[in-house]
Length: 362
Ligand SMILES: *Cc1c(COP(=O)(O)O)cnc(C)c1O
Image (cartoon, rainbow, N blue to C red; front, side, top):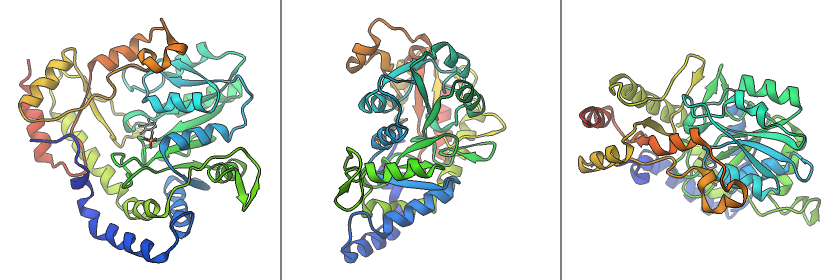
């Protein structure tokens, strides 16, 4: 059986370092907002090339606090791509704003800059840009549009740790960027965790307060805050794994290359281009008979996933916003996309096997 993901196998190379980190944290007697969090924040800011990093409790919280840090007026609309993972959209609603969906580019799966301007209204105050599957969005065009219309940019970099455009990393293309360290992400913790990167000191300070009851000075509460702290155990594990992130990304890129070179042309493969350094959190192909292909692979003992099966505009929870609204490009992607195995523990031989089966599919 070729599994889609296996967290035990994914983490096995790091077990002894994790155990050492766990034991040191345990013995330190300090479990919330201590040296591990400080150290990881410094390391991750350095990795992304940003001035600041603030650790929080999850990717969703990182998005919510990022949005709140911008002090947008009530009733603001925030543009977001229509084929994203639901968390991007939920974060806008949870922060008290209205998510306005813009369709993606059918080749990159990221937001289509050309379509953004059509959706800008007087209320539009920000664009939440998702670097889906590990490819940075067209940030050059998006930053131009944002500048022209005086909009803030928030990055959802949950799938793009280490991804680059023109050698600039995800997390460094916006006013404020949100990362998730959910265990399956390229930089994954051993539980829930997230972080925010920014080059703006005021934004960083507001998030430092918001994650801790709105307080930066003990018992002095400046904002209606949250409890969304990154904990010391997870920060310790993340510092261990961060040392290997480039290796993990390189490995996934090698596997993706193998797929791209060997899968036949009846499958739509991810587009790569010169200035984009993609980290393949997900490697997806598209095919008209996606469901049959998935079943066929399962019969041949290859597990796959679908990211994602339902377009957000069709989610029950979002019908108040999008009832009777159509997003044909997203729906096309959701109906045809299939994610192939591409974990750190997979070998080139695993990928060769998957390719061999897929190429025989009719
Ligand atoms: C995983 C993910 C999130 C949410 O992260 P959590 O840590 O699970 O809250 C948000 N956006 C995208 C694009 C994601 O892939």
